[in-house]
Image (cartoon, rainbow, N blue to C red):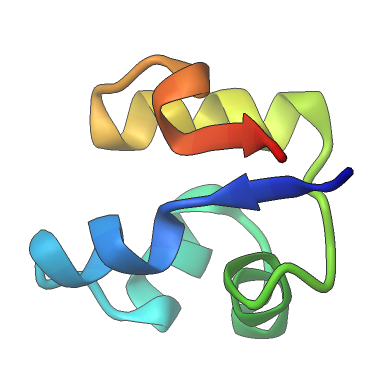
Length: 65
């Protein structure tokens, strides 16, 4: 079982670069890359920031599979 996310798809739909998102989240671009590629599960705090950034509920972005 692992955590999957829709961040890459959402970011592309909103025409947001990894750098722009990283700056808004106050993390490095490498962190965004790792999250998008499912190599890193963000903290609860960062997950909530991401959900707020896209105006969505956390469970709409992150799923347990």
